[in-house]
Image (cartoon, rainbow, N blue to C red):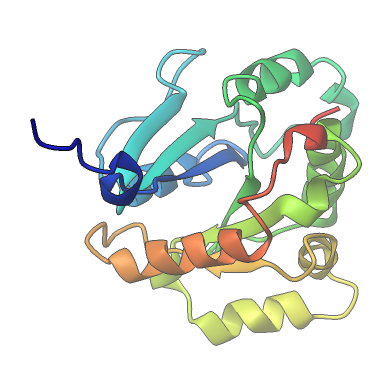
Length: 205
C-alpha cells in the first residue's frame, strides 16, 4: 500500500480577509464590493445579502455593507440610527473585521458635519478602530489623483482631519472599470500593511 501524501505540503494556505464598509447613501459601497468580488449585485436592503464572500487568489474575502445615511442626516440622529444595525452587521464577520473601509465619493464635497458624524459613527466600533480604518475614494475616474491630495492637504479641512484619524491610510477606486485588478491588489496590500493577519476581535467593544 502506498504512503498517503503529506497533506501539509500540498494544501494551499488560504488567507482570510474580513472588512466592513461604512458610508452614506450612494457613496459607492456596493460598487466597491462589486469591484473587489468581480460581481454585479445591486445595493443591499435590510439585512439581506449584506455579507458577501468569495475566494480570490487563495484569499477568502468576506465583506459586509453597513446601512448608509442621507446627506441631510444630522449628528442628533446618531443615537436613533443604526447603532444596533451596525453592531449586528459587524457581528456577521466573526470574530470581527480586519479593516473598516470608509467609502467617500471623490467628486463630492466632504464637509465638517460629514467629518463629525463619521467620527462618532465609526467610534461606535471601539477606541482602537482608527488603526484598522482606511478611506476609499470612489469615482476616482472623475477627478485627478492630485486634486484628491490637494483636498486632503488643505489646512483645517474636515477631510484632512479624517485622513489623519485614519493614520493617513486611503485608496482611490475607479468603480467604472471592474476589470482593473491592480487597484484591488493594491487595496489588499494596504490592508495587509495594517496587520490584518493578527486577531482583531478586540477591536469591537
